[in-house]
Length: 262
Image 1 (cartoon, rainbow, N blue to C red):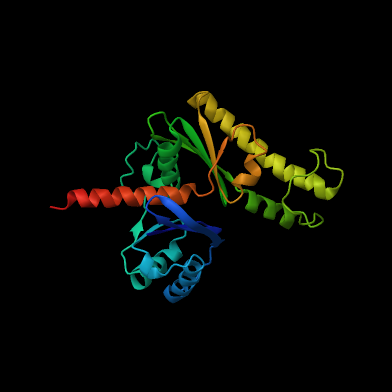
Image 2: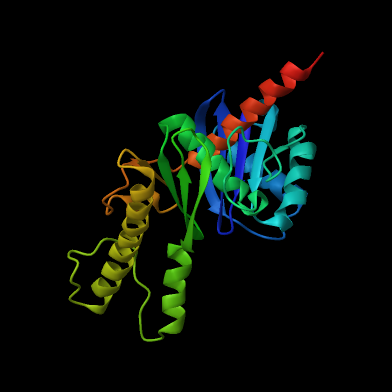
C-alpha cells in the first residue's frame, strides 16, 4: 500500500492507496516543528483508524511546499515505514510540456494536479485549487501545462477582513438565505461566499475564452465542495485530486525504475 502525503501551507492531506484505490484519507493542520518521532506517533494513530500499521505500507509519496517539514518527514518514512520516500520536486520529468517560464518557479503540486486532471478528465481543462492561495491551472488539449493564475485564498482573505475591521464579527462560512444580506452577518456571508464564487467564475471564464468552450473545470481543495456549487463553471469536484496525482506519479516512477533494471 502507498501512503501519499501532500503538505500545504495550511493543511496536510494524507491518503492510503491499495493499488490505485484510495481506501482512506485525512486532512490535518500543517504544523511546523514536529520531530521525526512525533510524525511516527501521529502516523501510527491515523493508520490505526483504518486498522492498518506501518508494516502494511510499502511506499511513501510526498509533495511538500513547506520546506521546514521536509527533512523530518523524509526521515519518518525511512525510520517508521522503512522505505525511501518518493518526493515530488520541480526538477523531475512529469511527462508533459511545461510552458510556464521559468519552469522551476511552478510549484510541483500544481504540475501534479495538471497531470492527474489530464489523466482523469482530459484536456483542455482548468484546475481550481482552493488552498491557502486559490490557484488556477490551465491544461492544453494535449496535456501540456500552460500556466495559470494565483489569487489570495479564502481563508487568508477572510482572516484579513476580521483583523482589519474590528467591528465585524467572525461568521460561520455558510450560504446566506439570499444574496442581499439583511444583517451584518448575512451580508458578510454573502460577500464571502458569492464573492469568491464570482472570482472563480470570472477567472475561469477568461481561461475558457482562451482554451475553448469544451474546457473541463475541476475544483479541489478544502473548500472546493462548498464554494463550487455556487459557481457557474465548475462541474467536477475532486477533493483528493492531489493525492490521486501523487499515487499516479509514484506508480509511473515505479514502473520506470523496473524498466531500467538490467
